[in-house]
Length: 200
Image (spheres, rainbow, N blue to C red):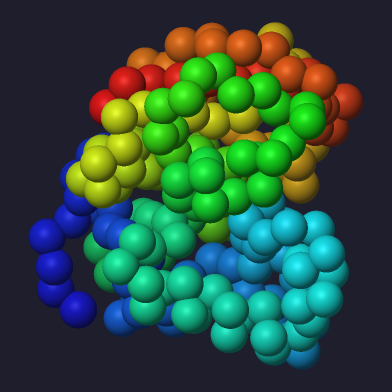
């Protein structure tokens, strides 16, 4: 499965989540029990009704179909041949965020969104979240995105519950060159969420 990565950073390589890499997507997002209805990173990709109706193995099948499209559903980080992270990135216009009443539109640019960053257990604390965010921006830029935005928590240094930390923190985005673009009415794990933006 040799291919040129989107980027190499801190000893890790980032690749688009292509169909050839679906087993690695499954390793990052899928359940141990294939019949379980885990998120599969679909809760913010699909309208709520569609997300509720898609159950069990159908969720993984849907994500597999996304990897077959020309625009991939996200990026994967690797330590050598081992997948260690995932970041979801897509045009905001294709996501429920486009109709959100809690997360505002800053302007009419065809912005892309990064909304889920996951590092595999056993690999945290190595800067992989930073590499994933850079990789997501690189992929969006390659696909023509003029601007990328995220909706992290503004936790002001307070600890964030790991189960809710997938949205990222304001500092993570600031470290990657994103700037505060708007405040929101959304919260996660008791912290307010903000719109962070970076031009590609």
